Length: 166
Image 1 (tube, rainbow, N blue to C red):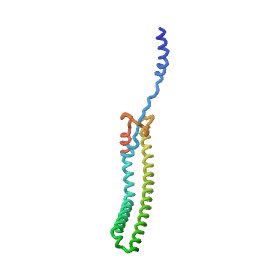
Image 2: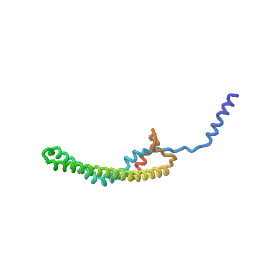
Image 3: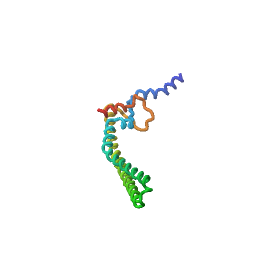
Image 4: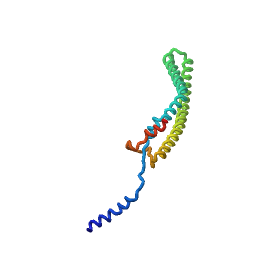
């Protein structure tokens, strides 16, 4: 009888806590990298960058080709050129290389700035969409980064992508 009363004393608090019903948390996980990669908005952003920077990239490629052609001419014909012609061509190659490097640096800076600007806007839109989805579907917590594993039952990445495609 003493054992039974001791067991009841130990179990009673657990039973009391069981009666207090705590709301179950609804938790979801979103793979932001996948959403950024596969969303139609990301495709639009990539296309916009390509359209804006492709012409400048072609000019840079043409500059490099021109420099290579002049360097080949210098190697091929340098021995038969006069000293002044060779010197003039060498200075021209050096000048073109300097201009090309400066143009490439400016291009890279402009591209990185624009990419960051577009990515920031895209991320804000994705976060707003995810937050709206969470509220509409009664989620208490949505996790995005630092998740090592999430079962398919709580991974809502495909749902977010479907919402973004609408």
